[in-house]
Length: 476
Image (cartoon, rainbow, N blue to C red; front, top):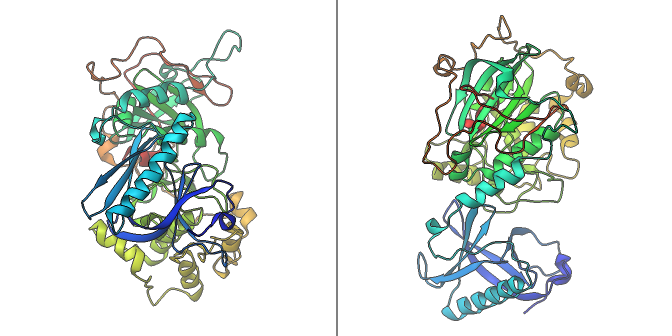
């Protein structure tokens, strides 16, 4: 067995290594990968066998801590499945080899590492007691996460003397949008007469749809962002059965009808909303592996089940800019399997009438190799800013909103909602009462969980027949 530990910069000992066929999680094809299992539980996959001559191209990075492993003979002979619980999600990775002997070797090695780490108290994934993932009860786990992690220690108390904010502090005006998780409502803060958009999410649905982690991420990101082109958060709080975000309201509509997270303010400046799917602390050289996003905007490395980094954002930027310049998506098919194949295999095509600079920019942003993608290197956005397409842009003036947008929404008042769908704006702002037989029970008369807020105003929640918040995309 060749040793790759020196090449990969890890002190953990190699337990087993060799070629495996890994099944794609979303495009169900089998890919040959060279995997290395170490005694710290890491199972890393590479396109080629690391030999020390060049830095290895790592495509997968899993953990076998606390996992289950099982042998099956479908969809291919000599298949084995690694299953574990991360956050509130049961994940599975499927592999196959060329013989039963090889399968037994890999399964025994993985099981031994997992068991040893469990005995040492290093279990990172809680194994279920059933081979059927539908038998795993996630509701209680997710509810604990909501209670403990969504509520931060910022509750108003007699000691800190901060003013409590409840739904009674707001006058509710119009529904701006709604979806599976709740409603977004335009409201006016009674004390200041300022307008806000309130997003109300149903905890029970968040738990059932396994969106706890995404909701907590959105809360953290909104609390810690301060940028002229990002939607800002004013307050956030919760009831026994709902989560509430009180956010900046902009009424210029959406950049595209189907891109509900790219909003415009009344002057036409971009405001980005909805951060539930973002990844925190991703810098050059760090990677993640979650499969998420809108199908038409997924980068090739995401579809290939590879670990990916910040270059995926520049691919998404390229797709949006291609739409704005060319008037259509670079890759589209209503059949997602066909769409994903196009993204992976098809070259980008351009209309004849676009400029050389525009073609160069889009080609760079939509390069299928993330390491060669414009902005994908260590310089990140600076490489893009230097591109000839942006030669006329003063970036400091842009950030300070000194450059007039090409389109100014035709709104007459702050409460003008002409750019929101009339299907929603004509609806009642009242909430649907919760199911009393549900896992969270009825709305309580008094605050049930600790609350939190922003700008030195802690939040608690009373009762009301109206609720609200912003960020339409996460509602869809």
